[in-house]
Image (cartoon, rainbow, N blue to C red; front, side, top):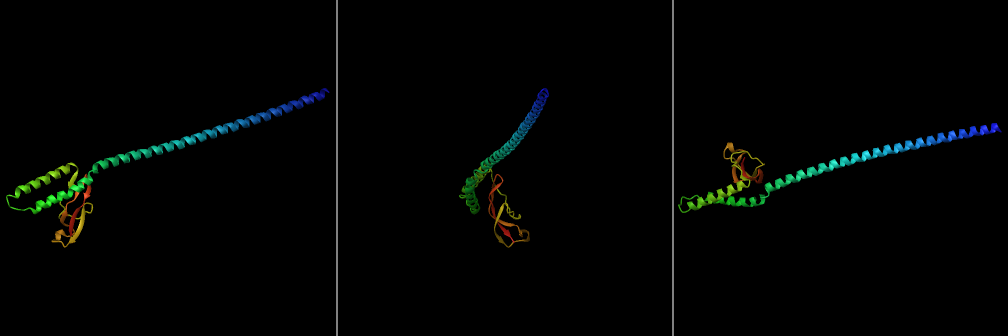
Length: 190
């Protein structure tokens, strides 16, 4: 009987050792799984953070570009806001110039009126120049530049020096702050 009890004690101890070792293995497995879950959760959070930072930077850059573009458009708009009004006034200047050109008289009664028209035209041009409007220089004898000139017709060149050059300016061109608002209408020699 004593031997049986010893065998039973030994068997009970072996079972306890097996249970303890299996419990330790299960605990280690659970700890490893928890660590992996923590690591994967940390990686996941780091990845989400990186994505959010990237999204924030792109959004910030897009907004900054929008702000710059609208500021530039606003400046451009203020520079050329009066373009329609000035374009409507230009034909009046043309009329004054035609009146001056066609009133070539030696009559003393007409001379003061002509001088008054010249003064009005000059004053109007100075006022418009203050607003940024400039008359293009006379292009007679120069080569056609399609950035500033509009060729309305071609005629045979009166001399060889006018071949492929501007023979006459029919209508003067104007720029507003270096932007062409009316092209000069010219006649080109062939």
